[in-house]
Image 1 (cartoon, rainbow, N blue to C red):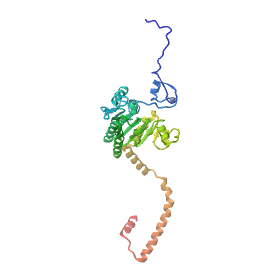
Image 2 (image 1 turned 120 degrees about the vertical axis):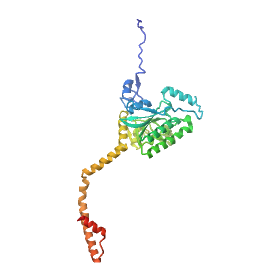
Image 3 (image 1 turned 60 degrees about the vertical axis):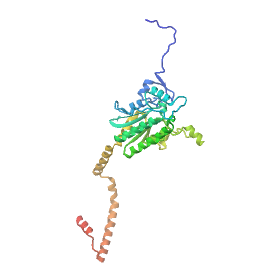
Image 4 (image 1 turned 180 degrees about the vertical axis):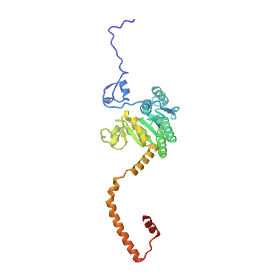
Length: 339
Ligand SMILES: [Zn+2]
């Protein structure tokens, strides 16, 4: 047995067990943090999570099947910054285990079929190049063809500049696909997470029928500092945060991560054609069985009007008998039917 080393400084490896909260600075147990879906238990700060983890928090267990996972970026512009574009792609692929910055597929949420596209910020800032645009477009088209809702989880710094105009064209392509999805009467829900910026916010992120955001997510087109420098004005506090956007009518809901699955399931259920048809039938049935108070309230007005109509009819009859105007067949029939 090896002798214990005396006087050696005691080292406990804590780096892999703790994580500091970016907002309140609290030291958090990683295991506890993971159980809480990567949300700080002290201040509620929502840490960024990977696309695959996100899919795990939203979809039913083992229901996810990935689609279009064979697409990989090329370098049409031969772009070279400090390193070549393809080198950066390779590095991001090794770091994340993904082919590009979005994971698409199909699965179920509380038993209801959906198509999802989930962005991953760890892959070159979740930037949208040709592959991201193409995969999201295909996911939308797949949802349209199979008559299912599409849920797009956004997390991106914007278009991928290494691909220049090719990346900008993805904005038009994804938007056109969503237009066709909408024309087919199908639902699109977008979930905006921290951060959703630039080309992504200016295309599909804000084209959802229902737009949900996670708390305190930064959502906007250009960064606040650039806007301040341009308009030479101080921006209000909380500008570009989810809550600010909700207050100003830019989004529909701010939902905590732990409630997202339930909320999405409800949204999908409430907008299903079958649900709408059933709701309509129920409303008709209800109208038949329940005597609405509106009817009772109408009565006095109706009797006043009836008296007036009867008086008018008498007057008309008197005029008719004087002038000997023949009574129309329709009136005769109606009078008979009344008797
Ligand atoms: Zn915190």
